[in-house]
Image (cartoon, rainbow, N blue to C red; front, side, top):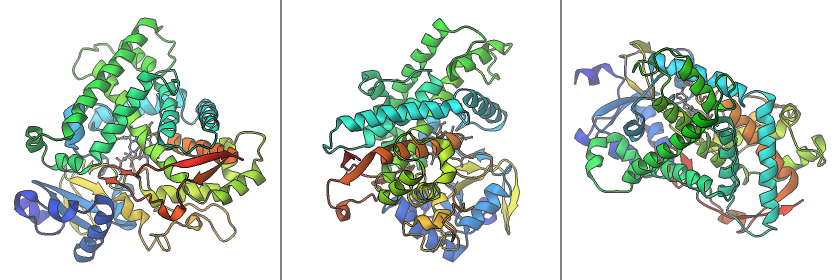
Length: 468
Ligand code: HEM
C-alpha cells in the first residue's frame, strides 16, 4: 500500500489479477492503445498499472517517453524482468543483464560487430550478396504465389549468421530451417496471450499445462545448437585471428585471467546467451518489418529507384540520401507497424523524479513506443499510413524525434544500424527487380497483427513476384 501511494496514480488494482483484465483482453496492441489513451486521459501520460502483483509505470506519448528515456537516459537504462526470458537467460547476455555486466557485454558486442559487419562496408557487401541470393529464389518462383515470410527470414538471419558464425546457410539446409523454426515458434508463442500471462504469473504457469512450455524446450534446443557452433569454433580457431563474433568472444575469454571466476563477464554461458540475443533480436523484428514493406505503395518507390539508381546495378547504402521518398516509406512503415509496441521493459537504476512523480530505484517501466508513433501532436493523422510524415514541403526526407521503433536512450536497440541497412538494401533490391502482385484483391489483405504481446506479427499472406 505504501508503494502504491508513492507511485504515479493509475486504475485501482483488482486484487491478484491486477490490471491484467483491464489491459490484456482484446488484443494487446490496439486494445492497449485504446486503454492507454483512456488511462492517460484519466491519469496523465505517466501512470501505474499492476501486472498481477507487480507495479509497472507506463510512459505514454512522445513527451513522456522523451522526458524519461532521453532526458534521464542513465536513470532509465536498467532492464526490467521478463519472466518468459528469465527462466532461460538468468540475467545473462546483453538484453537481460544489468549494471557492469551489461555495459561490458554491450560495448564488446558493439565493437566486435562493427569489425565483423556493422557500420562498415563489409556488412553492406554481406547484405547485398544475401539480397542477390534472395532475388534468385524469388526469380525461381516464376510468378507462382508464395508466402514471402520464410525467404525473408532466411535472408535476414543469414546476415547475422555471417557476422556471428562466420558462414551463411543454403535456404534449404535442414539445420538452418530448424534454427529458424525455433526462433519463429518462440516469437509467436511469446507474442500470444500465453506469453503475456506467463510474464505476469510465471510461477503459476510453470505448473499449468499449455503451449508456453514449448518455449522452454525450444530454448534448450537453441542452447544445444549454439554450443555445438562454439565447439566447432574451438576446434579450428587460432588465437588472435578471429573470423567472426564467436572467435572474438573466445579470444576475450582467453585474455581474461580467471575465466572460471563467476564474476567474469566472459564465459561460455555468456557467449551462448549473447549469441542467442543477437539472433532473437535480429531476425523476427527485421523480417516482419520487411514483410509489411512488401505491401506498401511500391509503385512510387519503384519510380524513384528507376530515376535515381536505374536498373543496371544493385542499390547500395550511398543511394539512401538520394532516395528521400523511399527512405520516408521505410520510416513510415516502421512507425505504422510498431513491431515492438511496448518496447522491452526498463527498470530504474536509481531513485528519481519524473515530472511531479517520485519513482524509486528498481521500478519497472514500460515504454509504450506505439504511443509515440500514434501521438497526434507529432504526426498528422497518426492512424493512417502516410509517407509524407517523413517528407518536408520540398520532398526532402525529414526525420521526426517521435520516431522510435528502436527505443531511444542508453538501451537503444544494439542492432539499429544493421537493421536499417538491411531494411533499405533488401527492400530496394526486391522492388528494383520485381512487381509485387497481390493474390487476393488488396482490400482483402489485412496486415492487422494476429499476435500482439511482445511483437506485432502480421498474418500469413501470399503474393506473386513478377520480374520487371
Ligand atoms: C527492425 C528491426 C529491429 C527493431 C524494431 C528492434 C527493436 C528493438 C527494441 C525496441 C529494443 C529494446 C530497447 C530498449 O531497451 O528500450 C531492442 C533491443 C535490442 N536489439 Fe533490436 N531491433 C531490431 C533489430 C535488431 C537487430 C538486427 C539486432 C542484432 C544485432 C538487434 C539486437 C538487439 C539487442 C542485442 C537488444 C538489447 C539491447 C540492450 O539491452 O542493451 N535488434 N531492439
